[in-house]
Length: 431
Image 1 (cartoon, helix red, strand yellow):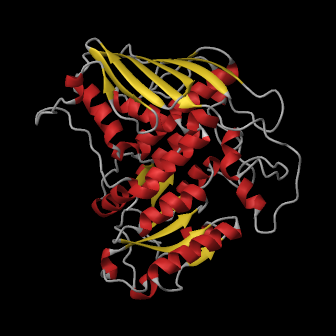
Image 2 (cartoon, rainbow, N blue to C red; image 1 turned 180 degrees about the vertical axis):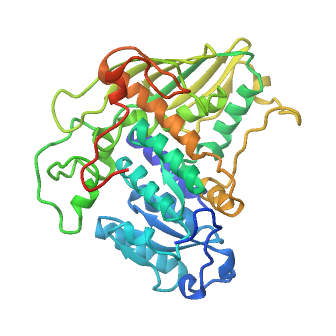
Image 3 (cartoon, one colour; image 1 turned 90 degrees about the vertical axis):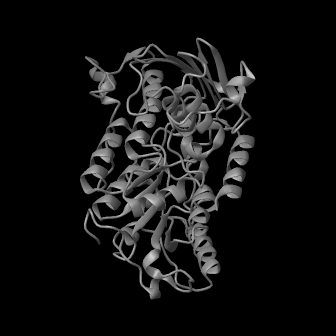
């Protein structure tokens, strides 16, 4: 993700963001919790925000504050400066002093007056916190991606077992260009799809400085590490840069791939499946702190014969079929096609209409908390697209082509690759 594109995407989101039983509907919030409001307490969904850094505040916290049927009642961050900034923002919004702030997410999950949580932590915390929240009877809106394939399947099974609503929190399915791309391809406007071409951004940083540094007094660093292996504190290790370290994330491929691969899977009608073969090549930093791929080229093959080619460059996606092509260049770039008639095509009443919510991920999540239906980016779909990312990284690390069975979710007869679908967690944390 280049700095320019990062700012562009987040600016867009800022402008567009407007214990109960396992199967129960959300608990009703009382007037004491809700503070001043023109909306009846029984119609509001109480939310606790876990992780209130840049995206967690600018997009997710503000996204829920903009919803009249939601009430943010608690915020959590291991960085006390970020935590207090979020608390002030919430209290100013509601004109009271009711927002609770904590460095320990378990304080939020343990509250019976909180219906749902918004999780905006680094990737290695997404699944553990989501699992604990589901088991505590909370509905969950959680940033992408998962950290491993194994934990993604455990997350899906747990959400289903406890009957919770889970939104994989990205905006793409609510954005016109990506929804339109997928719908046109699904309805055959370019003929039979045979090729998908995706570009993801370059990693924006250098190799990172591994020199140990004193832990800042405002930071609970041990909690930040959580289930990840212990490592000395370094400012290049956390906040935005955690993405370039395997212990916490999967690099650009998991960061941006989760966005554009989802559109690819949606259009290819494989959102509940995945590729059957992966062949990835890439380069890594020779020195420094960062160890995720800095450049890459990936070829995926699907059971239906479709090929998806991925490389680093300008965020873009293009679908090619037997009767033309359609795509865009740049984040939320304008649609382009081999024939203007494709862009102007009308989807008929008897054709495939793909589920979306123009109001975005937070609006869709709240609607589904009430209806108990799956959001537009359900836990299963989120797990599947995260898996597509992880498959590329595993192929890159092993330096060879891999076969994948998306039904059984295994690398057939490949024990080495299978070991890379899971990771050991640092005690006392576990799935």
